[in-house]
Length: 96
Image (cartoon, rainbow, N blue to C red; front, side):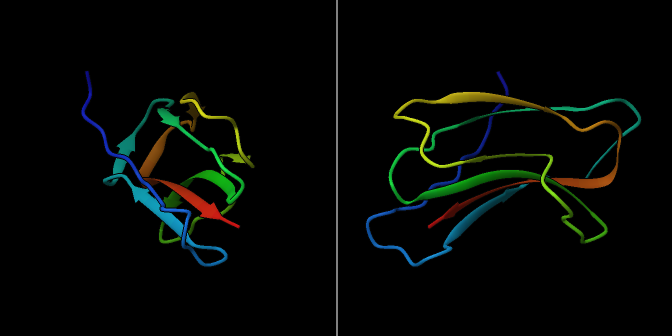
C-alpha cells in the first residue's frame, strides 16, 4: 500500500477552464519510470485530465491525456516516462 492524494473540483458552480493540479516531489531516476494512478471523470462539465513531466519549469506536451466523461467509475492508468532528472510529475484536471 502506498499512501496517495487526490484532486477534486466541485462542478455545480464553476467557471470555464477551472482546473486542479497535483504535483509530485522532485524525482531523479536513471531507470524507466511508470506512474500509476486512478481517475474518475464523470459529468457533462469534465474537459480533460492530463499527465505532464515538468522539468526546468517547463510542462511541454502531456505524456498522457483523456477527454470527456468516462462514466461513473474509477479507472486505472499507467504511464511510462523513461528516466527522470530533477523532474516533477503533474496531473491536471480541467473543466469546460
